[in-house]
Image 1 (cartoon, helix red, strand yellow):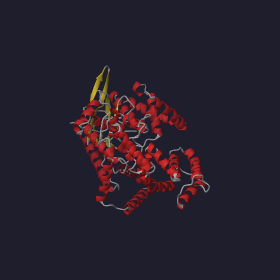
Image 2 (tube, helix red, strand yellow):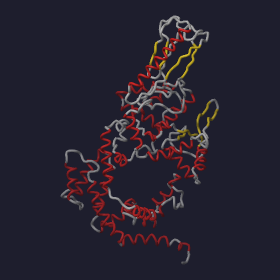
Image 3 (cartoon, one colour):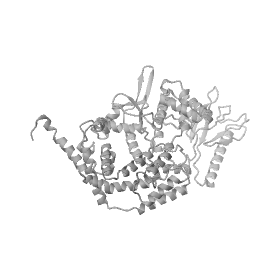
Image 4 (cartoon, one colour):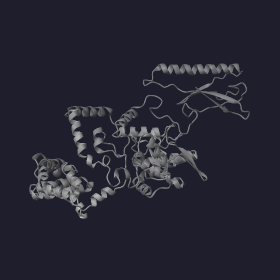
Length: 583
């Protein structure tokens, strides 16, 4: 029960209005709760009527107005002498349009996205709130918990929550400048110091790398820059509101982005001016949504009016948090988009609609189909071969022992570590060196994939295959991989060229593939539908297996590889002789 007192007339006569918050109705909406509510209203009316009779009123009954949120007892219209208190002589009408809590508290959390058209202070009830959650919300919550990166998000959010703790958290304060204030900020130096102190990190570069990851995912952001990075200096940063955290699986559409950019153009503030890439995006969106741009403009105008009613400092915080949200989902050119979902993870989830730009497709699908798909995936997992944990541990141990020498964290390189310093000097030196190091040549012997990933190794392997008159295998595999990176408009042409060169009956460079792979390739090219970029995957996998099991093993035993390996060793041993050192 909340008691609200308001002034009615100039004599400051107090009028007490009792507002009763409604009880939550269960999922079935049984009649017992409704009867209980009716009894409560009746008892309230009878008590008010008794009070009026004792105060000497003319006996008019009060009218019970039941709104969507609370029940208010209001005096009847036209009851001239009806009094609620003995000293008052005027009637009062109370309209309850807010939630059961009358006092509206302003927080840093934003209660609407860019396209919602509602403000943080508005308090309308959403479907599913206050009672049982709706089916769509429950389905979306289940999908969020099954998101590909949800475990990583939870770990990062645990760290951010510690940073925001009142005791032992990062020092957040309001900075007073000349004729202005910068609310709720902290410096990059304070953040790095907190990470090193509370997360047991001794290296500044490692702490800076962790801060970069948190910023790139949108958990914290610089207040004056679109590039989500962290510097160990006095630059000001601000925490993102949990409403915009990545664990909520936001998938904003282009219309939302258009409303946001259009709203920015209406606000005459230097800090809200559009960057060059944002102005270009706005022009593209205006051309794309030319038919409904008037509707988008109206939404942006409504949101802009609501923003102007907020407190100045609060508006600064909310604007910066909304800008950081779009910097994550529509990053500036040259920045990594951390919201992209790997297609393999999306396929394993059975939700291929992720990344399509539609936020409601995954949540509104048929739950029966989702459960059927999940049962099918679980059955496939049961049919998979099982391996003993001891064998898995042995394979992992041998793998990490093999790559121990190439791990920049376990064996720090001579140059700055590019994984934690953003300095690519080590990679550039290795790529532009005239002589191939022994370290790289030894890595060719790990697997065929390592050999083909190295440009020099792939060139050497191609020469070896040409000597053995099987160079068409590598050419075919490279052509298929190149076709996958082509734009969709060029896939058909590339597929026909590959088929005519390697798989056709009169091909100039025929490859040795089985009849099944050949038939699938022929059907893909000759069908009415245009071939896709994966139409030769079966044949390419067959050719790759042939190279891996036959040609690659013979290459490692060949004199060509041994001479190259010994040549690298001789170069390393001959370095001291340049200075006249005797052995």
